[in-house]
Image (cartoon, rainbow, N blue to C red; front, side, top):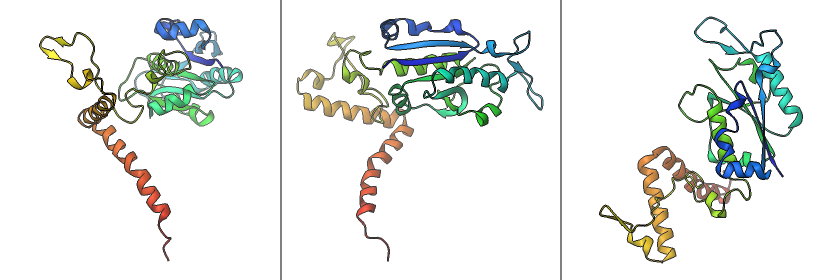
Length: 248
């Protein structure tokens, strides 16, 4: 099954961009995934093809109009009724690797790219659209974020990556940052590869990698570490609750 992506944008020339090269580009050429760009301006109804207007209540910048965006969304959804629609906005829910995996396992995705001050909020009340964010940063538009989302999905499609384990032994896949990597030369500027990685003992190597993942996550991303600890203890506490007798 081909993973079908559609990007609603004011700048369709930005796609496929970097997704046209390397693994994603090869997968696109082989038909593993497909890409359609939809020019939002095509759904404007006036002679100037206006897509935005001044903010209600005053303020700087311009806001993308709900009527124009809804027409573009409806057009994209008509040919992809089962594909989720994601709007790229800093007001959205932070994107996670778990959500990426869910998207990659589906039929595709429709990505709505914002510009200017963002979207008329009524669009989200009128259409089933998931607002997502890459993090606590503000970009000039949703297109770079859409490229990131697509790249993250495409690399997980069957056959795109060479080694099956490449998609699972990564940061965030198991709630931890990935362990550090090394390669030849064994010694570089007086620094050597950890001895355990040269030992050939796969059990010790696996244990070392797990330990390093835990250390790095605790030091670099305490938020992830707290969630990881919570996920580890939750099944045990949940099982305990199931086995307990109900209160009399």
